[in-house]
Amino acid sequence: MTEKIQKNRPKDLRSAILKTALHLFTTHGYFNTSVHDIRREAGISIGAIYHHFDSKESIAKAIYDDLLEQETEAIAQITIDGQTARDNCRAIMNHLFIMAEENPEAMEFMLYSKHREFMPSALPVCSSKPLSMMRKAVQLGIDNGEILPMEITLATTCLFGSMFRMIHLRLDGIITEPLPTFLDTIFECAWRGVSR
Image 1 (tube, rainbow, N blue to C red):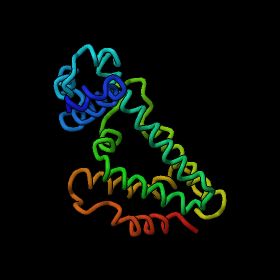
Image 2 (cartoon, rainbow, N blue to C red):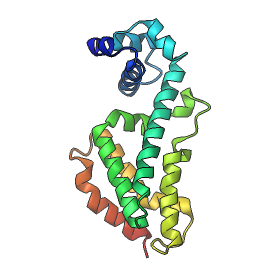
Image 3 (spheres, rainbow, N blue to C red):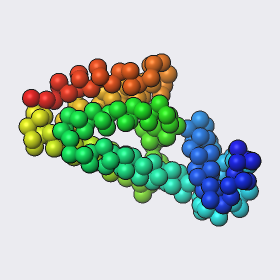
């Protein structure tokens, strides 16, 4: 990793720090990782880290914010086409299954970390923009009659709860097959539970 960082300085230095920190936070835990661990693993100076971040908490917050921004953009792109709520919700589920396969460390950081323990000012994931957009997709389905009228949090949980459980099981190694292989079954079961 050191050679790559050296060649791409300073443009990719911030992303290299975040990538290294994400890996260490998910493999060793936030509280068991120090800034010096990040420095050593990334092969950079402590000054380089403190040039971009003022603390380990600010590194974690940057990871959190960047991941939320990426997911906000991805879900916005999915729902921009004006498809049915069913199509939008299925596409969101597919996207999150693919993300769990392609970037399990990011998914693990978002789902498993108790963010408020080390970022007291951070909104909980369930109050984040991507989850709000998922609720909005479900609300669209309620409003247009695709989904039974019910409280929005209940409807969203019924529709996406099994998806999050499958992601947890995949991250824990209980499920060994790629999550997209289960998409049709999981989505159809969830959709039948909320649709008219």
